[in-house]
Length: 271
Image (cartoon, rainbow, N blue to C red; front, side, top):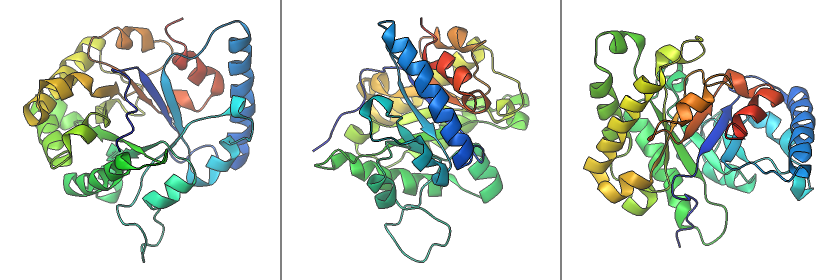
C-alpha cells in the first residue's frame, strides 16, 4: 500500500549538516530550536513546510525526545542499497527505518566527487529506497535525489545537457507511483559551500527544465506533482526570492542549517 507523503508540492526544506554538529552540538541545536519553535507556536503560528534535518548518524539520537511536541523529522545523508552484509562503514535501509528516519539524501555532489558515486549507483539506491513506499506500516523513507552541474559544465553552457543525463540515468526504472513521492534537489556544484548562489531566474530555468525531463520520462501529471528543491547556498537573505519561483518547491540547505536561528528563519520564510 503506497502511503502518499507528497501534499501537492508542499514546500520542503531539509538541512544537510554534512560532517558537522556532533552529539553535543546537535543537542545544543535541539534545545535552542525547540525553544524557538515552542515560542512561535505559542503565538498561534505553525511551520507550514515539510522539513527535516540530515544529521550525522551518531548525532541523530541527540535530536530525539519522547515528547511529541519536541519532534524533529530526521533525514539521512546516505544509505546502502543492500539490506545487510559485509559493507564496512555503511548503513542499511532497515537500520534507518528502525530509527524512524523519514528522508534520505542520495547522490549528493560530494558523494559523487569524493566517493566516486555514479548515476548507476544512485539509481540502485533510489530503487531500493522507493520500495519502502509500499510498506503497510509508517516506516517508508522518501529519497531526496540530488543532481547538478560542475562549474566547468556551467561555464561551457552544458547545464541542461548534464542534468538531463543525470535525471534519466538516476531515475530510470522507477514505479511511476513511487516517482510522485521522490524529492529532487537541484544543486549547482559551483554554488555549494562557496557563497555563490544561482540567481532565482537561473535556478528556475534549470528546475523547470528538470521538470520537463520528468514529464518526458513519466508524463505531465507526475511531473506536476514532483517536488524539486534548490540546493546551493540558500540562506535567510535569499530564501524568499528563490521560493517565489514557480518551479522551486524548497531547499536542500547546508551552512545555513547548522545554526538553529538561521534554520528556523528558513522554515518560516513565508511569515
